[in-house]
Picture 1 (cartoon, rainbow, N blue to C red):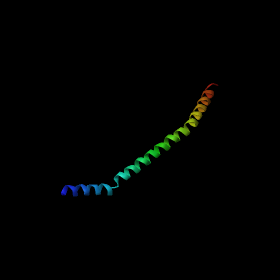
Picture 2: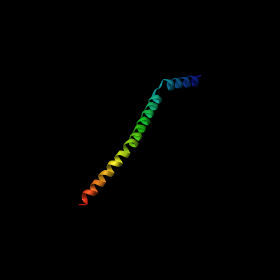
Picture 3: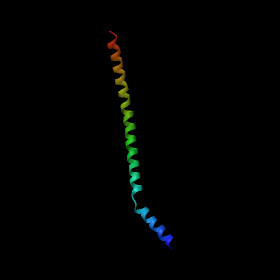
Picture 4: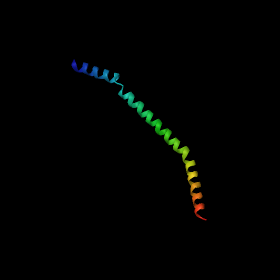
Amino acid sequence: MPSRKLFASRVEMAVVDEDGAVTVDWVVLTAAIVTVAIVGIGVISPGVYQTASKIESDVQSATNF
C-alpha cells in the first residue's frame, strides 16, 4: 500500500517540521511589539499635546509685541 506509506511519511514530515511554530512565534512577537507601540503612543500623546499647546501660546504671545 504505497499510498498509506506516502501519507504516513507526509504526516511525519509535518510533525517534525518547525516552520509553523516559527511563524506563530513571529506573529506573537509582532503582536506584542504593536501592542507596546500603541500603549506607548497613548501614554505619550497627552504630554505632546500639552507641550505643543504651550509652544503655540508662547509663539503667539511672542509675535504680539
